[in-house]
Length: 181
Image 1: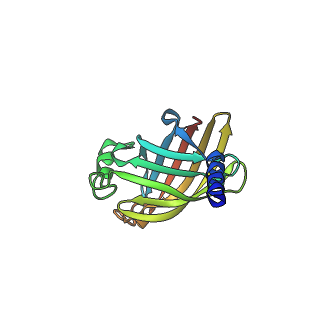
Image 2 (image 1 turned 90 degrees about the vertical axis):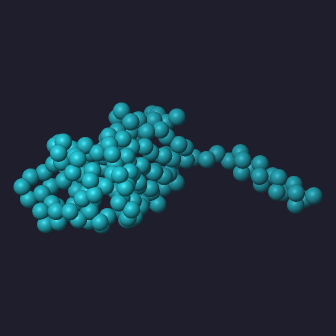
Image 3 (image 1 turned 60 degrees about the horizontal axis):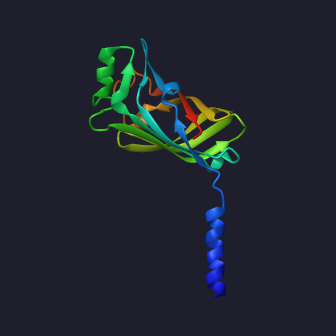
C-alpha cells in the first residue's frame, strides 16, 4: 500500500509540475530567410518565401528551448528569374528530389541576454551537417525575434556546381519573429 501511495504521489507531483518551455508560433508576416551568393563577377540576392517552425522557448533557461525549421525549397526566389529556375534544378537545390531543408537544434548556448548560439543539424540535399548559428535575440512582452547573419559552406552539402567561379560560402540573413500563445 505504501509503495502504491508513493507512486501515486510521484505521478501527481509530476503532473502538477509546470513545464517552463512553451511553444511559440511563427509570425510569418514578420519573418524572412535571405541569402547572397557571390561569384567572381558579382553577386545575387535570393531567399525562401515559405518555411515553418516548431519552437519551444524557456525564458528562464534558454538552453531548455528548441527550434525546428522546415524550408520549402520550391519557394526559392532570386533577383533574376532565369537564375531562380537554375537554382531549383539539380545543379543547386534540386527541389523535385529535395523539397525541403531542415534545421533542428541539438543545443542552445545563451551567452548573454541578447546573444544566442543555436547548435544543430541542417539537412540539405540529403546530407546532414552540424552547424552553429549565431543569433541576436530580442524579447518583448508576448513576442520574440531571432536575427542571424552567418556564412554557410554549400559544398558541405554536395552543392559544388561552379566551384572556383562561385564562392563556396553563401551569406545567410534570417529574421524569425514569434508570438507567445
